Length: 225
Length: 410
Ligand SMILES: Nc1ncnc2c1ncn2[C@@H]1O[C@H](COP(=O)(O)OP(=O)(O)OP(=O)(O)O)[C@@H](O)[C@H]1O
Ligand SMILES: [Mg+2]
Image (tube, rainbow over all chains, first blue to last red; front, side, top):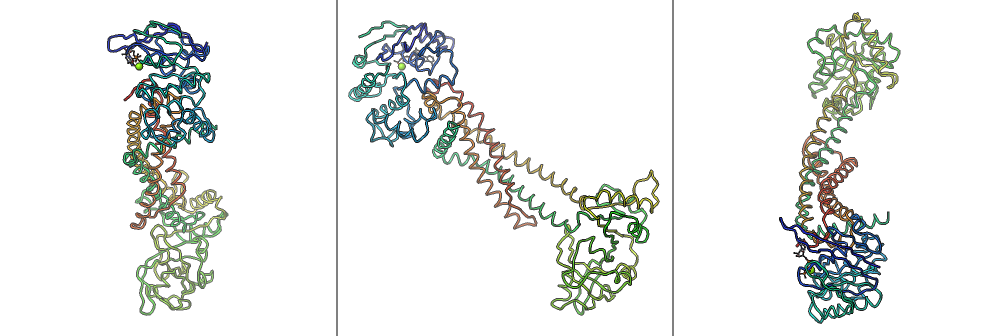
């Protein structure tokens, strides 16, 4: 078992009102699963992903990642998990605008103390895997949307994480570019990676072999294909 | 260790990148630091210069020479009371010290007067005429450049001879050789037997504008003086306190000071002037420190302010860094380094500017300035303190940001 969620709740307080973004999610995810999370806007997909990615903490419930209890970790331990175990891909790419593609990919390596001589090699290998060998020294504003998302994927891959989380990775891309990105995920899955992605598009979800549908912060349906 | 070095180096790179992105702002931010460090370095250089000038100028007072007179050099003694004291006389005090003091190497009573000196048509006003004995050469540590000093025979036989200071020789004799010529000092003729080496100033008093003549002849020609100073050279600088005690005992005895009475004479030494000077410069130091500190605090607050703006502006960046595994301390270090880099830039400019201003002030006023490694060290210490202290709060704020909230920030 790679991930085990038990009765995860996330409650936001907005003014006097309580918003239950997640209202008791229990979920098991095995290694090398390829999973899509779907659901209407506001159903809690991003909230769930952020908790899975250790970016956010649940209000209650327990989260076990490879049998370690994430819900009880301190800031440094969470940073360590984000750095080594999880690769996060965002809808809006979230690259550092002033850094080149290769430097963006190097960042996770910097934060685990990989010496710079090794960093260059690992980062350029990762960029090669996503087909960007010829764009290493470009800054994000010199790249197309699809290329930026590839840089972000290369960055997510660079520490060989156990799991790749992607929140609407194709949301800002046209259909054709979206397909190209999905091909990369497909390959990663075939190489043994565990992938969880959030999407609104059925045709994107069709790439995966398990679809979880959320509604109002609850799992409405969990189907394996 | 490796990890830390990588962190530091990356931090410096990130800092430079961030500063390059905001050149004008970074420049203005450092202005306060520049002014602060400039002030500190400038004042420190000038104080160092003053110190150097001061200690050379009191070096003519040997550190192992005592000056015995009615008046203390310290302003503390009551001047009126001191004026009514029994005179220090050559016979009573001079001879007593000579006879009984065991810790002294040389004893030279001195009296002095200002006189006009003439040679042929050349004239020099207000020359300091000193009547003393042959041991004056030892007590005041002076040697002749040409000719010789007073001898015991000169003094014993009250010969009309004189040893003249460098400036007297230069101004009165021009390019003639003064040795063996007759100089008239206040209308009495004296044969020049020696010319003193160049000696410079003693606290603004020109030591080269001096003439030394035998004590007896001084008294005969110019009258007995009430202002006698007995200069005493101690046999060993380490024994100066013992020598003072010994002389105090001798003087109390010959001046018949009752046991319950205070000393009615003063034993002065170089230390006293140095002490006074030190007290004076301590005040100056405190003032400089105050001015510099205020400027640095103002500069530091400027840096803190701009760093806080920078943290807010770069909230998203911080979120991204945290999302991919930066720990709180990585972010803390990043902003601390940024603070130190800005401060260091301002500080280095300040150090250079401080030296330049100090030199300009030295060149255009009577003050002098010394550029010393100590000033640079002080500058660097200030840079570290200010950079760390004022960077800490913004850096801490950045480090504590919640990753997901930071990422959402637009
Ligand atoms: N920081 C927050 N403060 C208050 N409420 C929040 C916050 N973040 C999310 N929510 C609320 O939680 C609910 C779920 O939000 P979430 O972003 O997870 O939805 P989503 O499924 O990702 O939607 P979308 O498809 O539009 O991205 C929403 O009702 C939202 O208003
Ligand atoms: Mg969302």
